[in-house]
Structures are given as C-alpha cells and as structure tokens.
Amino acid sequence: MIRSVTHPHTRALHRAHAKRYLRTWVLMALTMCVTLALAAYGYFDTVSWPELASAVLNTAYRLLTAYVVALVLGVSIALLVSWSPFADFLFPVFDILQNIPSFALIPIFIYFFGYTSEMIILFAVSSIIWPILFAVMTAIKSAHKDLSDAATIFGARGIRRIPFFLAPLSFPAMLTGSIVGIAIGWEAIIGAEIITNVAGFGDFIRSASISGFTQASVAGTLAILVIVFAINRLVWAPLLAESSKRYAE
Image: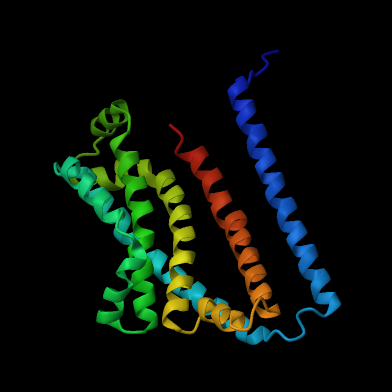
C-alpha cells in the first residue's frame, strides 16, 4: 500500500489555519452570546432598529459600489501596465500615489462632488484600488518564467495573453488584494460619513455617540462585526480555498 506523506511544514500550516479558524468562530460565538444576553436584558430597547438597518444598508451599498469600480479599474490597470514595457517606471509612481494619506484628499472630493453619496463612493474607490492594483501587479511581476514560456508556447500571445495567462495568474492576488481593500473601504466610507454627515452607518454612530457611549453605538458596532464576519466566512474564505486549489502553481 502506498501511503501519502505530508510535509511537516504543510501540517504546521494546516494546524495554524485550524487554530485561527477556531478562534474566529469562538470570538463570533461569544459576540453573539453577549448580544443576545444584552437584548434579553432589555439593553437595546431604546435602539431604533429600522434606522440602524437603513444606515448599514446605505454604507454597504456604497462599499459594494466602490469595490466593484475599484476592482475593475485596479485589475484593468494592473494587467495593462504589467503587459506593457513601462511597468518598471509606473510601479514606483503608483507607490508614491498610494502613500498619499487618503483622508487628506477628502477636501478635494468635497470641492468637486459636494456632500453627496457619490463623493463618498469615489473617495472609497481611491482607497480600495491600491491593494488590488499592487497585489495583481506583484503577482504578475513575480511569476515564474517557466509559466510565461509555457503560456507563449500554447498560444497566449499578444492581447490573448491577458485573458489566458495574466488574468488566471493574478486571480489569487486579486482576492487577497480585495480582502485588504474591503477592510480599508469600511474605514474610508464610515470615516467619510462621519465627516460629511451623509446618511449612513458613520453618521448613525456619530449621532448616537454625541451623548456618550449609548446603546445605539453598541448595537451598531455589534452589527458591523457580524456583517464583516459573515462576509469573511461566507464569501472570502470559500473563494480563497477554491483559488488555492485551482490556481496553485
């Protein structure tokens, strides 16, 4: 009988992943238990749940819209730049632009777009795009030459190189960049809503916190924790697992 042998380093990675997975679920279970206990005790009786739901939906809509725009722009720019002879020149240029503090740009966005939902979405795009752009560019730049040669041999030349070689190659990097970008997007949108008083979760938290650490602010924080956990476990985790199987080198 032939017995498969797993490398010790691989087993260690699996154990570490299992521990992180277990800790995440334990933390979320504790959060849910605390939430249910507070609700049973009547702690959230003064919370306007329809108002909170509307605020979260407004913020989630802006985040989703900003992410889609940033994903399309980031991946398209990364693929075109990496395919062009100007990659080595543009990489440091993008790096400089990325390091500009994002919230320092809010006055510019307000000047051109006003205190609107569109302004917040475009501001979030300017924050989300960079992790996606750099993750895809780095993945393509660090690809093994053997893969590039094999793609050329099998006909991935010219413009065909983008859909048949560069796009599949960069898919895992696109996912990791998206995870980081979404995390930055939450911060950007909620912060912009707090600053501009545009209706959303940030404005809800600002209004609830004016009189101190209120039940509404606690409920809002718990709601965001649950949403972020659900997105990570139901969307990103399966996509990462699938990409590691399908696109592993």
